[in-house]
Image 1: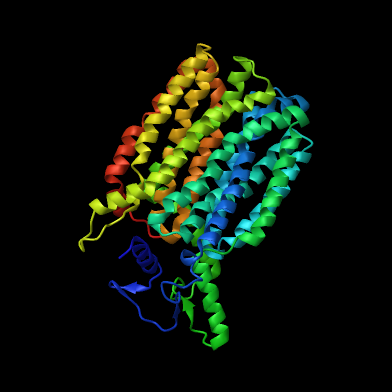
Image 2: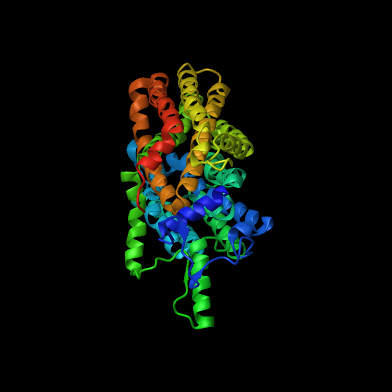
Length: 496
């Protein structure tokens, strides 16, 4: 039995379609027309799959560009609105990520109820409208409100992009596909300040939002022609509805539909509650999400700190300060390339060693997790080098290159966690990644607010040493998850 077959059985158990280990034979249950049904997204052509993934990645990159592209323009904004509040100067950047806290709680469950396609399109249109609102903002408070709303709608691609990839690829083929998609959400925040620095210096901070609006509007238009619905329960529900009309058989239902009649409002309520259930009652989801919150918080803390360090210590002009983010970008690209090329091979190798009772390879979601240990070691190394070289005013290239370790560590944390959640929770992957996104975004929103007081009190050297010490906690945590993750997941199984 393949890993995909195991998850298909898990899905059937979840929906009450299997009793005592045997599939219920019901002629009124609508399923795919065999394993090679071309309507099944797993059987789409390679061209269609990769067109969707590249478009997913591009739109996700634009959304995450918006989280940081605006950062170099903060001095202009504060000057124009006559504010000297350092807390507000950080919050106007991180409030976008605060939108990532609230958006996934609705967006993830909605995709499990209504499918991916309509949620994508509606969110992207609203994101464009709210970003235009940022460009026209007449006051700092208005800018903050529109930034928050743009964050809520902009959270859609990063919340369900990984699940969309899983819709189209069996587990043992997802590593490379997930790596290609993840280039958008991970590279976007890094290259954003580079373009933002030049745009702000040449045309002012409002030009950043006009650029983002144009990019998203163009990509949304392309997505109308490229995107197709990929969520299997939605596709089979539509197939069942069509067959009920064509055959006049009202008893037909998809294999994912519950046997008893449940009001749609109840289904929606359960879907909305599901991410929080995962956080509260699944220790493995909670621990991974909390660790990701710390790592993600460090990333956005660096977005605000790099600008300050290289403008005040190294006297970089606004147009060039964005280039200091290249170290993070190099580390991320290297991490994506390494993980994409090795993840599926590593998983196959570990599966071969963990054979089941039938003697066949037995892949597990936990086989995606080992690289997280390297990520947990890389981040504190980068923070220590960055902090003390900046403190001692070492040649500017050295602190930039030190952030390569941080970018690499971020990838080797983000990718294994995303792959694990997608493969461990099957059709509920969107809810699992939504739960993770909520926690991660809390770190990205609030940790940067502590950055300036921290560095003012301890300086760059000891301030980053403190952060590195906290990051070191990831080593025993990642070791425990790799060793005991499966036992924890099975012991505290959450009824979804």
